[in-house]
Length: 414
Ligand code: HEM
Image (cartoon, rainbow, N blue to C red; front, side, top):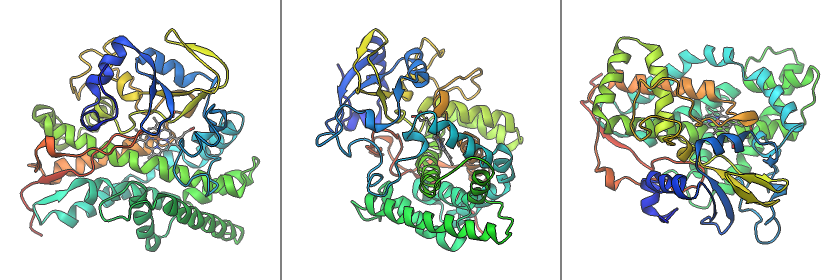
């Protein structure tokens, strides 16, 4: 049995996942926090578990809840800040109601209309370091892009967006952020969002048009279904929380994979130069499958005894679906460890599956395509400026991503 959750594992978990898939595809494991959970690593079992309504998202079903398990599942600070009632923590019928509401505001049309702004953001970030000939792509590009994008979409005024950048940095321990500030950052974000929602509500009542996402959410809830103040705040919080570190890692892991596969990168660079949007879209899906941002789907808890992959899971036990392992399952994907940016019929689980399927997938795809196209177009000789063995991966449980991504390129003079 290979070691899980140590340094070597963080750098490359795929051999350990291959072992689990082959030998113990549904395995009870002690996590670094001390909580025991079932890890599900085969594609078929993973897809089945993600769609199984007997697996609840509500942490109240956790059998270790109470003194021992308390606070060990979920987002640090989330409980204290009363943000628990968000999509990733609830089941139908509440989930159905809230998802329907937000879907009315978070429409593919709204995302599409946002494309020019994402391009502008990506270009402005590249302008910030283009003259230097070197950069840390996580800190200077992958991290700020999704924060500004989701803030703009929600309707957070530009002058307040730096606060979000700093809170978000605290939440994922960006260099320069104070340690241990996660709970504090979550609380500040919550207070800010609650006030913003309150303000937008008043503006809408005064007849303001308000075409941002928060206004859309308020309008959707005022026409029929009900959304409490707390649910509205939790909704905005989950959009931010689910939408930023994931996208940071999509860009970071994606660029890193390209830099390590020169032929694939040359292929994509050609597609970008030809303005071939379709190939770019296909490539982003493969980058998600190959080394996606969400290593494990968020927590699920058995509401009754059930059998998965031949294993008996008891009521209250946590189940973690390992998306990164499922997406390299040879039973599902030909040559699963090969990066093939032209891979067709790529039914990866990087965005999950079932009723909790990623709500932000259209925005994530737009950001991923725009980020890669901007970098490849503007910095055509982009290269890694570090030994891959020296790069550090974040140790979090759910997400997979680099702490830094040092690169160099021919400087662009203004
Ligand atoms: C759910 C992945 C970007 C909002 C999920 C889930 C996955 C995922 C795997 C399901 C989790 C589970 O079932 O436990 C990703 C990836 C992204 C990304 C890989 C980037 C590449 C975004 C963005 C947003 C977003 C940009 C919003 C702005 C959400 C929300 C949910 C979700 C709200 C919960 C949906 C529900 O429970 O109904 N995402 N996500 N995500 N994602 Fe994303």
